[in-house]
Every structure is written in structure tokens, then in C-alpha cells.
Image (cartoon, rainbow, N blue to C red; front, side, top):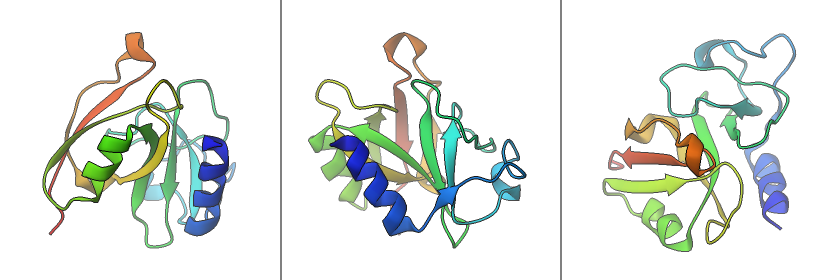
Amino acid sequence: MPQNDIEKLRVTNRVVPVSKEDEGLSWSKISNSVYGFSYSPAHSDGGLFLKQPRQCYEMHKLGDASLHIVAFTTPQNAEKLQAKGAQDVDLYPEARDEYQVVVMVPRDRIANAKELDRDDFNKLKLSLRPIS
């Protein structure tokens, strides 16, 4: 079921797989309207790759050039993401335990991020800026 949610999100966002030519280029240099996979979703600049290794985050670069992390979280964190205020959230690259809700987090909303917790299935802890 969560994979179906991701496929629906790809359709809604009108993204296609990142091209071979753009694969590995920095966020700012890849084409718009693509998705790919990254082990560095919270870094200021990273690259997208076609292949999805285990515990790797899906990223969507939309037509307006905004970059978003696609991840799994709890229903409570998903609700918090709807609020406009500053938030702290935990995300996983794959569904697990109570982290079953697919969310999209704008990269430019990240105020602070801890390194991926490799011992906890690449859990990502983010502090998010408020939405103005």
C-alpha cells in the first residue's frame, strides 16, 4: 500500500525518473520534473540517482524547481507537517513499524538536520522552519 501512495505522488507531482545525463549532478543542475534517490536528502546539495538502494530516500524535483523529500512518518508527525509553525519530525526512507504514512517535505523548509542514523534504518531527524 505505501508503494501505491508513492506512485500516486509521482503522478500528482508529474515527475519522471531522473535522466542518465542528470544522474549524480547537484540539486541545482538537474532538470525539473524528475524523481530519483539519495542518501543525502537533507544536505544543501546532493545528487539524484536512478537506482533505489535499500534505505535510500526518494526525492522529487518539481516543475517549479522546488526539491522535496518523500518519506515515511507516523500519523502524528504527518499532522504536524500540516501545521505552519516550526516542527521537529522523524522520517524513514521505507515504511516500518508505526512509520507508514507517506509525506513530502520541502527541502527549503529544513532549518536543521541530524546525520542519518545508520543504526536505525537511516532515520532522519529534521527541525523545520515555519511556513510563512
